Length: 349
View 1 (spheres, rainbow, N blue to C red):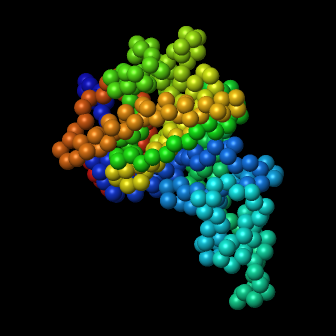
View 2: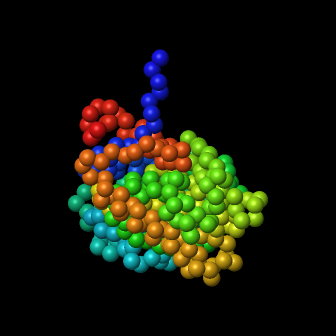
View 3: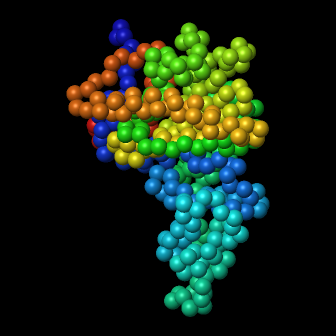
């Protein structure tokens, strides 16, 4: 009888290919929901422009209480209604700065300048804003780029199973951090799923937070996975979830929540974004609490940028350790999404 194949990491060729990066944008990024803002940063009657993987997005929080997302371009000539540099802006109507087309926050065209003078008969109803999937979960706003993403509750399967009460609590932004990492996003994502390195690479930072390796507990959902470690009180747990395609959700027993993501830029760089949320009572502590996170993230930056330099021609990854099971779990999801192209020989092997 043939033995089962040995577990293995993704081949390094998938980290170096422009063709693979294009397939990731088309067949991985579009299958999932992406956190783009803290819900509390977008009060009712406000809009907020941002970019997600190069796509201009406009978030709108109407007086009806619904948060919606649209492509941030006027259907007439594609000019943006607002710019990301403006932040959240109080707004009752969206007015295109180019030709004055005016929309409500639900994306319906209310008026176009000089409507009677269009070459052909003009129908307002034919020109709504282009809607994107948009939902609020865990005090964050999530946007879907594809027409048929997996349900957000499925993407968050394990967090909702393990920490539903914590995720239902209304949290406010405590701090936000963004920086560019000189590595492929998969290297950064792999690293944050890597429980094998914590005690060695973070002895005075993250290791002190997570405690002895012998107490690590792994749990796996269909889409998400979890590292649970005992908290200092000996009764509760510090929870670190890995989420596709490139997200990580951290939950502290004291009510804090952090979301870390690694957005692809190109083959050798990605943008790391970190939201830190918590109870209103901890709002003044945001700077100190984020500094704790940035200290171990800086240690990781050195490692992932070093790995990027090593992932060149001729490199083959070594065998997975049992403490790298969460990497294998997320890589299996990634591989399954790209399997049709991988099996057809249209991807590097």
